[in-house]
View 1: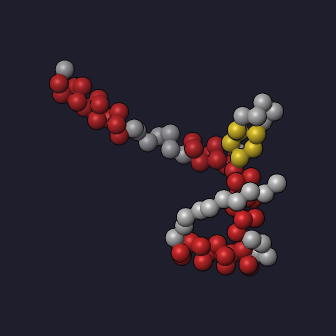
View 2: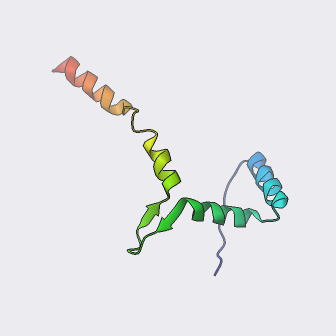
View 3: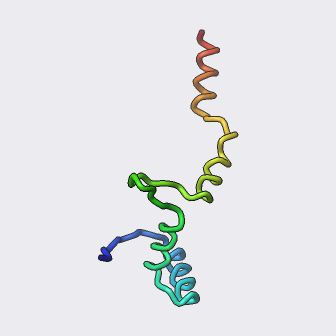
Length: 80
């Protein structure tokens, strides 16, 4: 059964969403629902499983170092 969800978005974002929905003969609610469904699935145990697209996107940041770790390493070296 559908439930109500309130979102707070910029006016420009709302205008864009309504325009896209109208162009596709859909509703903003339908677009949001399809988007959420497209980026997530559940496996048999009920755990959230990421789609292949989201997994690829998450892997794109693996090469970036954690700035907090770099700062920690620097301070440890400086004050050790």
